[in-house]
Image (cartoon, rainbow, N blue to C red; front, top):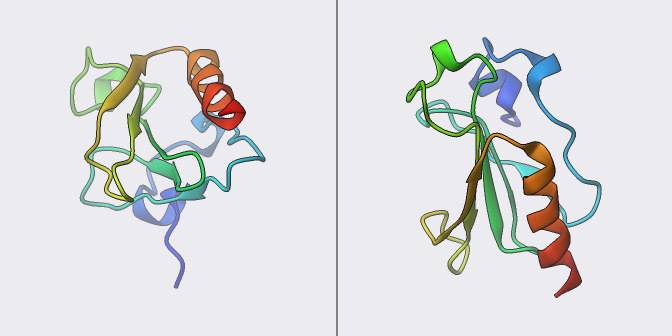
Length: 100
């Protein structure tokens, strides 16, 4: 069975999930023991955490909705690239990595 953010976080509103870019081979890496859904791209070397839009159900209510981490040899505990509440800033990071 393939896991997705919907299977791992059934309470996460599908309408709140931003559209993933078509390029970069971004795959759903969500795991129910994490605080929120996540997606990764080995091609881009990025792991993207997407917290709930509703701050009251986030692990850290005042934390950022989006966190992008640079993968270190496929390990998702690398360097934080950006923490933001603006999806367009995440897309800009993805575009920068794609251009490299």
